[in-house]
Structures are given as C-alpha cells and as structure tokens.
Image (cartoon, rainbow, N blue to C red; front, side, top):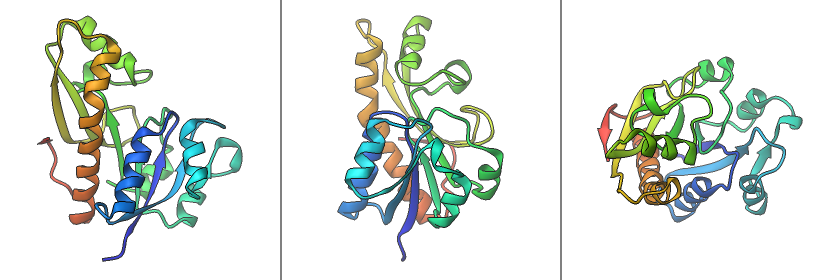
Length: 196
C-alpha cells in the first residue's frame, strides 16, 4: 500500500504535529507529512517542520488550496489550527479533514475561541465531572463536524485548566493517531461515535 500524504494545520507548539511525524517515521502510520500550514507567519510548529525538511505554508505564501493540490495531499489533520477551513477545501476533501478538540461536549465547549486551556477553564467552571477529547471531521463551522472518536478524563476537584489539559493531551494524541490509522485502513470511512 502506498503511503498517504498528510497536511497538518498548526498554529502553536506543534506537539501533535511531532507525534504524527514520529509515528510516520517509525512506520506505525503508513503516511508521510508533506505539508505544514499555519494561519500565522511564525510559530514553533513551523520551526519544527522547517527543521524536518517539510514544506511549510504561511498566509503570505499564496493559496492554500493550490498548495494542497500541488503536494498531492490525501488527508488534512488540524492540530491547534485556529481558523476556519475555506469552503472550497472542505468540498475538495470530503471526509478527509480531521480535527482534535479538548472536550467531549462540542455544543457547550466548542466554537470560535474555544481551544486549549480556554476549553478546560470553561469545563472546570461549569462543574462537569467528566471531560475528555474528541476527534471529528471538519465542516464549514467550528467544531460541528461528525464525531469519529472520543476519550474520557475525570475532572478532579483540585484541577486547574493547565493540569486538566496536561492529563488529557497524551490520550488525545494517541487517539488522533488511532483515528488516522483507521482512516487509512478504511479508505477514509472510519466508524463514527467510537470510544477510546
């Protein structure tokens, strides 16, 4: 089987990006990261991609849609990418754009501005006893695409937004890798609503 080509959208530190690149190098994902794009001109994720010799794209470097096509991308994985994906890209990559989100109730804890510790802070403030992470398909709005897989993490009485996020992230990253594996194995049709 040929390796699929992955593009990753990242605006932050690139920790999930690093996990995906590492899994590709180790052969636990039959894939190759061929492009990293950001909505910022500079961020640690782009620095990592440059170091690894991966093609990068920033807002000043032209048209993302054309670059995705040129790089022959099969799957787009958002990992801390904070902008909406343009409609033309969603239409060109049906059920081939994934996102991770640090909550399991995307109605209460999703949407514009709800990322990172903004989410875990809202979860703690709401009094929820269980939270977790979600991997979902991307559509034209924030955090409204079909849910593929979710994990659960208890909210502890002494949790801070940072400590809760720290417990969630390793599980979320492993779940993301599992969803990518399933996406590859099922030709882009993983079962929806799975638990991790």
